[in-house]
Length: 203
Image 1 (cartoon, helix red, strand yellow):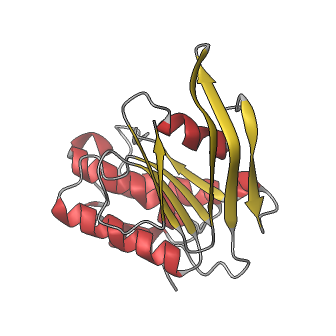
Image 2: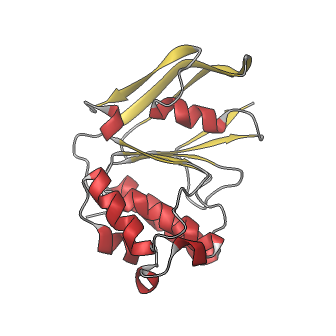
């Protein structure tokens, strides 16, 4: 079984003629693309172009100005998505293991130990988040993806602060998610080292 688990229903998503505005300014419009089961799409563009806003719109956090987002073979999108923002969202006083156990309880997952092993943090499970390096904190945030299977991952700069080994780990968990039939979208400034099926550029 891959990190994301096998998704036999072949999930997918389609973005059609999407337009998003922020603060009264249109960031982009007429954006269309589709990602099928096992697919990986890189969202590219300059700072402020709307990459994060696109992911947030797909996640249901932001209402588009126009267009539509549809999902294939997914009954309840809110329960099918993992959204990982560019902030790690960690509690400084809580230790590594406590974070993963909390996410497991919140998301209905039971893969806490394996998640820590996969992101390379098992040996420091008792260390508080405030003592982590930036790279370790990002690894811990990524563990959230592995605690409970979700067919669609929305990742905002997931490689931020990761060293070469961390980037390899990230590539491996993305490959496992895709191998199980899951879908991955990542907003990036530079390639993650994973060959995308789609490169969506926001001008």
